[in-house]
Image (cartoon, rainbow, N blue to C red; front, side, top):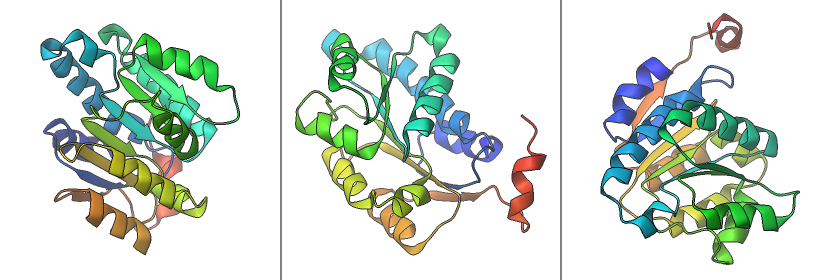
Length: 200
């Protein structure tokens, strides 16, 4: 998935990526997000630098923590500020992190919406959005929340949507919110064999 995604994502194109969990999607979208930060920070005003430039929406707390950790590791030498925002823990530490300034926010839909509606999370400068495990978000009933978040973002942005399967509502979502996306399928006919054979 990285081999197929990176050239398009680095060029700023919208991507609809189909790949199973555990195949390395995080850096497939993470490297282009970090690259974009470098370019943006060179020409941004100080005030703009403190609000998020990229948003990654994930279905579960566990995935949120994992993706945030991977992006922090990958962006350590770039000084990338990555914050994980998810429910089930107090608001105050997350609000404090956002106020200190952040480049990439990784979050679950409910908590992202809460903080955006309370004006703690600024979404007006998001230049890149990733929906990771979109089919899981559908199963967990997050689709209406995801659509609300998408409507809060600037029209001009890069959007990448990743999903293991492409049910009808995901295709509809991609048609509504992505601009001429390239559909990448990093799958084999025997899809269950993919994960075990992926060399990390």
